[in-house]
Amino acid sequence: MARDPSRIVGIAELAVSVDPAETLVTYSLGSCIGLSLMDPVAGVGGLLHAMMPVSSMDPGRAAGTPGMFTDTGTLALLKSVFDRGATRANLIAKVAGAANQVDQHDLFRIGERNLMILRRVLWKNDILISAEDCGGAISRTLVLEMATGRTLVKSNGTLRELQ
Image (tube, rainbow, N blue to C red; front, side, top):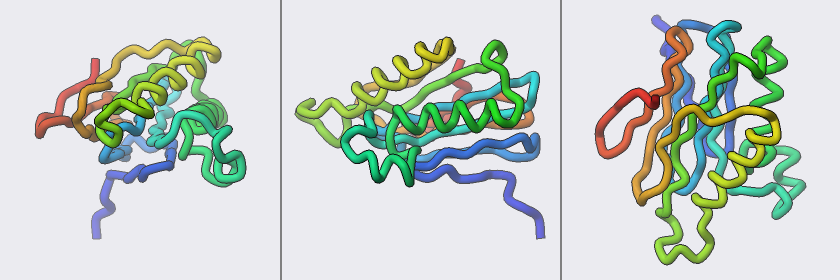
């Protein structure tokens, strides 16, 4: 039986791969934030699907599930790709999500805060976002193809490369 080359990254999860036959996929990025990191030289990539902006709201949960929060999830993903040989100079960061779906009256602004925290953590680690598809009120799917290093985003039924 053939192995499915896709690995699903669920809500509040992160995954790292060095397998060129693998594709990392995360679905249902509404107000959540999705981060794709790829070092094409080392062949190391990772994907994060974070729900909430800051771990200070529940440090206990953040300790057990760092991917739930943008701040701890981003740091955990960075550590994981660096541990597998990625270098800061070669790292390509792409982002999707941060929509205003759950909170239509813009009361909590979770999507906006997720993106703000993600940018801050990456900036403090000398990593710039090279492409993003964020905001609005649509759900997105984020895909990282390990063989090519391409990051794809699907929204409104259309799959396109995030450039």
